[in-house]
Image (cartoon, rainbow, N blue to C red):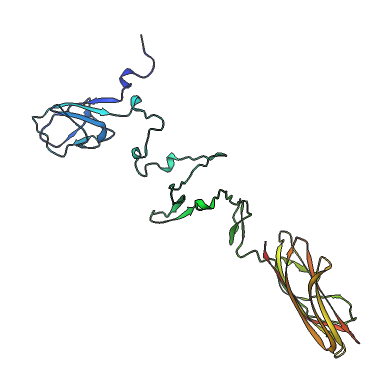
Length: 330
């Protein structure tokens, strides 16, 4: 009956080559059916000369076999067998060892790594002793490279770093503590920042009357955050801020000032201990006040400077006040 499928002559991967007629040379051409034959390797060739099977004592280059020594013309080639690849020699699962694969033989064309929810596409293992796993990114000439390395075993760490969706210029990567990375300005995002000063003195103020200080000149103001005599935290700029202010509180009548106080106000209310005060039982002409502090601010919070003085007679004047602030942390 007829046979459907692979021909029976192809079930075995063993091929019988043409016998060689020796002529005293050391190298000869391998042929099958009169056609030059290229074996898979020298290890795949078994050849019998004068009844002795030869294996591993010759080399093969393309279709040329070289014995490295002259073979007398009186010698007889009994058979040549090529053990090629085929159905009968298909490797079983898990049988291909590292030694069977040539160094650098696996190229990028053979790699299409896929990650799953539980298995990474690539795993760089440690050596089971003291060497932690790492990967190396080489230069174009493969003469040197940089390494990305795991924390030591003693740290007991297992975490994931997730990169941002886009790149921001002149920034660095930071993590939120859960492995989510984002870009932030180096050294902290120190904007917005402002510095303003009083160029028109506020004079003729009543004794013990708390007055908001007006500023007529901006030295600088990023984000246009200072307006209407107050600094307001812009959208997206919440964080920790440094503030500093100084003023000169003076009596309108010479040597009538008894005390001077400068307050920081936040969202329309005095900030408790955020003030500078000078109390004197004797009468004086003026008092210079200065105070600096750090505060955690939310978007929309606003800061103002107020001052007052106590005089026995006359009025109070506010001179040369400055107000500066900038963000120091996210």
